[in-house]
Length: 171
Image (cartoon, rainbow, N blue to C red; front, side, top):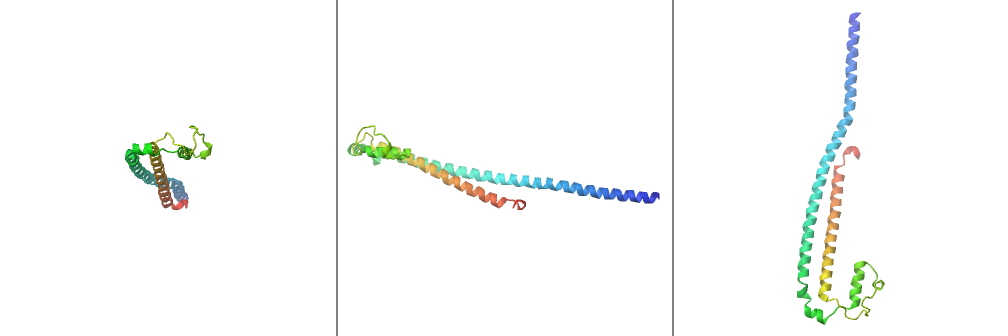
């Protein structure tokens, strides 16, 4: 009888050990999945940081080049629009108002006529001053355009990284 009880106790201990092992294994699976997910996020974040840094460096270099070209163009205004040109060909007030309206995004007729002159009357704005301002504004627009292009490329690169790195469990 003692042998039978010992055998039953032994079998019970074995069954209890197997059951404990199975429970521990089931508890470990979510932890393993969480660990895998965390590793996946760390790798993806590192790749995303690389994309962001490369995009920033590319964008900065392009904007620096645009600024250099813009400064060079502004420095050449006196070569292309001389003082003699300023004297001989004054900008009409209509052109000044039109440009001001375009900068503000307004209809030119919405702007007041501060000089009280007709549109075809010569203004006090020199053509060289206009060329300088317009060149600077165009340079700024080119910088903004470049930043937008770089931002759009960054979004495409990040989306491609995300789509390529989505784990099979989340698909």
